[in-house]
Length: 190
Image 1 (cartoon, rainbow, N blue to C red):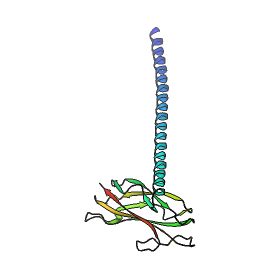
Image 2: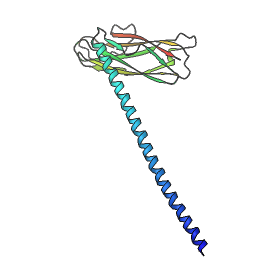
Image 3: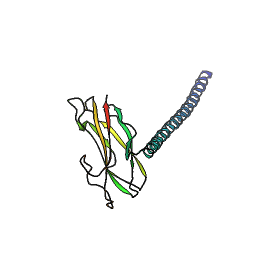
Image 4: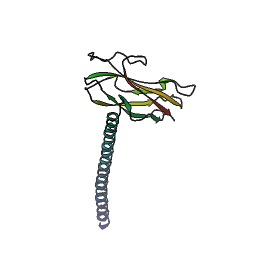
């Protein structure tokens, strides 16, 4: 009879240990997830701070120069399917609010099997800038998975109507008489 009672007591002790271990495991998991969440939150805040400081740098640089259009980088290295951000500034010089048309394009790279369509660039097509102010905008550059490993010459072109015409130009071709400013830069895929 004593033997049966001892087995029940052992089974009860084992289940209490299992419950304690389970509670400790859940607590540690919660603490670990909380730690990871706070670390990722801090990293996101640091990226936002970098973006803000980059904008401030572009504003300071364009205000201190006679340039109407400026880029924060003129040589960008990128890998296939990777995205990179580039900031550019537009200075409005007439004193009136104007709408600027933005065109960013890349030409065929140095490799024979390259094409200007190997590089995708996303940005605003048009943007309003208040008189005498500077706007800093972001362009996202991405290389297609089929892109050739080479250097691509690219151009940022900004156009604006003159005089009292507040509408955005309908195009911003390289031969347009409405070019406000343009900058050349290079994207190297490697």
